[in-house]
Length: 357
Image (tube, rainbow, N blue to C red; front, side, top):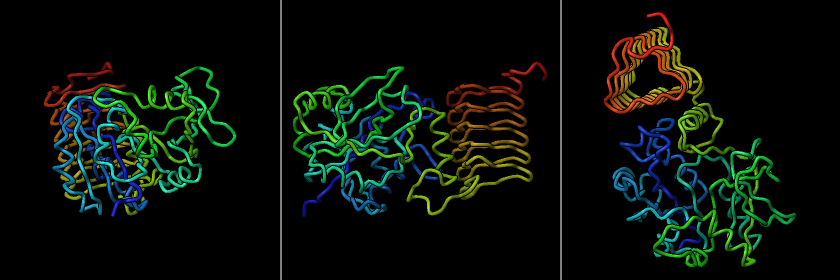
């Protein structure tokens, strides 16, 4: 039987803003609160009663199939469609057209952490009679985003670029509902932006694009700062996820982890499987990947420590990304957006901001 609604998740991006972590894994597969980030989104889709999901892949496409297989472990039926060349958001949607069998298609950007009820977005689409429905979220400061004004009935009236004086605080949340035939109209075989080309073209034709607007949790996980905050919000129960049974409190410590005496784990910290945290270490809003080591007395704040990496005794790592298997020497200080590439070894006292040693 043809499903009434299918989901498409776009996961083809290279995740350049999260390098060096994404040199070894696609962004949606990075560990987030104990599971690949994509698992949280797929669990939301399944809990909304949608079981037929297409993944639009490109960069390191094999990683998704290797991990999820046919999707049965999540109660899903997964299909993989790979872009041979980057096609943009609109081109990526068009690229999977032949795999779409439902008349209603929910499209998700695979790097957005959201809390809205997917069923409500679909209901808005059907009740409005729109050809495309956008999920919009209200934000406190819309200047960093393009904004999407709507009329009194909820119809979208324009797509505006970033401006210092936006006319509305409604921004594109990266979730769309398409009638399948509209996807078939997107030009095939070339890069297309859904935000800059497809939607404005539909509006210019007088087509019906509607909005589902709410104040639900929303975060683009594309930067290290947002990745750390999103992970912490999941752990603390601020961001909802069916993949987490309960809010974990101030920290989530996974299986096989060794935490030394007097270590402090707060701020939604995650310590990965087989990791080691030394005595007296302080982890505040840290994301520690599997197999990493934080030695005694080290401080890690709002930072990501990659697979198998080591933070030396007494080191300070703040607002930093440490690549896989890198080694940070004792008493080093890494601050304010530093990024250490995989395998790099920094000697004891090798980088300091303080004048003492």
